[in-house]
Image 1: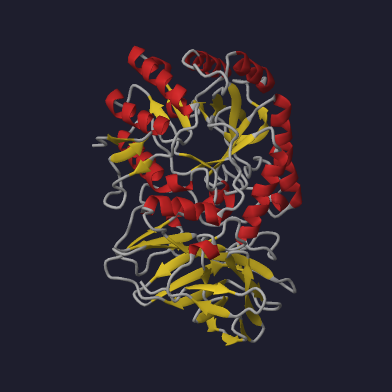
Image 2: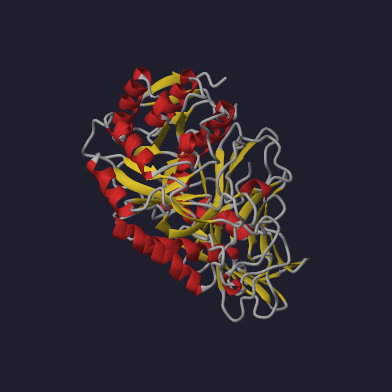
Amino acid sequence: MQRRHFIKISAATGAAMLFSKLTYSALNGAAMMNAPDEVWAQSGTDWVKLTASNGSHYANKEISVSLKTNGNALGVFVSSPKQELNAIRLKWKHNTAASAKFLGDHWERSYGDLQWKTIAAGIKNPWYVIIHDDKQTACFGVKTGANSICWWGVNNDSIELTLDTTSGGVGVLLGDRQLHAADVITTNAKTGENTFAATHRFCKMMCEKPRIPKQPVYGINDWYFAYGNNSAELIKKTTAMMAELVTDHSNKPFSVIDAGWATYSPLLPGDGGWNDDFSKPNDKFKDMHALGDEIKKLGMRPGLWMRPLCAKHDEKTSLLAPKVPGRDDPKNPVLDPTIPENIARIKHNFDVYKQWGYEMVKHDFTTYDIAGRWGFDMKDSFTSPGWHFNDRTKTNAEIILHLYRSIREAAGDGIYVIGCNTMSHLSAGVFELCRIGDDTSGHEWARTRKMGVNTLAFRLPQHNAFYAVDGDCVGLTKDIEWKRNKQWLQLLAESGAPLFISGQPEAMGEDQKKAVKTAFAQAAKVQPQGQPLDWMETMLPTKWKLNGRVVDFDWA
């Protein structure tokens, strides 16, 4: 690989100085991106090339892009006073070896498909891309908390960064304000540093201020055996059963109550209903404050699941997000996150949880409720075209960030927040934990293997760099052979990442209880970060470095 993209910019003069070799002592392990060779802008469906001037400014009519040194990154600042702005694209000349492999991230949760790829053309690499060949590992990314949704494209002779500035499914209307779209950052692997270590270090560079739990997080969750058919009595029963297996009382586990506790409203007589009000429990739970106190008496810390943008069945139309494909189910009306009244309602829910004494909240569905799509459907665009929220002056990334930061503010320091179905790069530095993959299972081992093992292997570099990575639960039920779940339990418990177990009471025999007791003791303490040793050759790594030793798993 050529290194035309690595430069150091003088803050005093703005002059660019090319390096044929990285100087880590001077640049603290980082390097500045060179000015791009081409800059393009999209307004509506039209792309236009911007003309360069002064080495750091690009313009075409009223659309302009300015590049500024921002710490160890290259800041991208965009103006478009009168035209809608859909995207900006930066392009650098970059010769890539034919033998190179590429690793990108996912927009939000991963879906069991992360891997080192050998074909780069046409692939969108969300947020960052790691390029490895026989000689070096090069990392390209944007810092977390960007005000645009970003992805990288790699070609034989170039590398491109696209910054999506849409608002809903149309271009943002910036007016007179300048948008700080993103901060671009890059580095190379250090001498003797493997790809996993380089990726982990790069994640730390992308997120300068992660919000990390004070102690390792572990505990239980009822979803993968109850699947919403839960109750206060079931929660107390399983909490008591699993609390007996806890040995480290200096770091107590969490008991997270998943979907099924909130008020429901039926659409039609006999309809099962849907979650409607996340500030009120239903008749199966009645008193969430009392249940939280009971969980604490049993030796665990109470937590619960909620869906922030879920609207009530009789919601005022003026508060709802527009109906678009994927977001048009009358059973699931969605609040518009750009309306202050809706943000105030979400904050109120968290005030209620604090009054109840809950110490963890897992919030779900925000990406789907905003975009009407799961991450795996965002191949062509973030959402369907032609619609917008009440406020069209903010990008989708800014709308999402405002929602996340509002949740953070409402949760305060007393509640750990798990983002589930959240945009990973926008969650970093805001929430303590992130559910990094799609659902594992209490019924299908193939799903746990795909969504759990793959997700943990390829997103473990983000652990304690962006947040604590939650690879999802061990669905410890009678439907999955114990010899299979035993391996997944071991991997989570020894990875250094959070461990959550959905333990069906009927499946908790003596062997299971003994293994869970050991796993809880391991997960309660700080451990070395696990590493998938064969992650460059397979989507389901079987050889792992855990606690200083090599462990082989048989996922088949």
